[in-house]
Length: 261
Image (cartoon, rainbow, N blue to C red; front, side, top):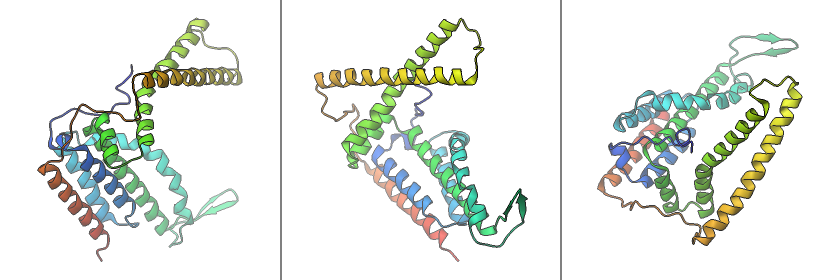
């Protein structure tokens, strides 16, 4: 199985690692919502949110660039907001002519775009820290305790568990194709290659569908009732309550800083 590419948990014995997963999950959700609701141009609040991410990384004994580097994967998705630079009313910064179109980026549009990118990256960084300091079964346990729908928790757990199986199945299909072509480069056009790739994707879907039926029948035969148990008994202790109180204070300071004159 190819576990490492999908499992981002970094084992450790820091305070962040030892906290109960429930307050960690609730804080992450509250942090993402709080950061998303920050107004455009709230640079002090965004700086405090980013410092919070760095502080948690230090406490968790993770490299400072751990979450930052991985959050860059979300950067192409934030570029979808690039058009706000030209559509938000404000003071024009310059005028650009591209064929029949005239584009005028504004100062308000630039501020909004920079705010969207900053909020998105900081939110992704906090989510990365959560998965890096909390084992996946513990996250599922926390979801159940905060009353996330049982079916959604089961879907998430099976998605990660059998994503490895899906990758292995795809690798077997690629290996079979290479064996039949003797490692030679195809001499036909791109349409033929796209057709072959489509057939392989269809075959992968059929195999996955058939495997899912067999797995479900096997789980029912073993007494599966829709609930996934964990070997860890999570009990909220004093340090968890203190961490939750500190989280409330941090989120309050970030929001108050956004409304300072």
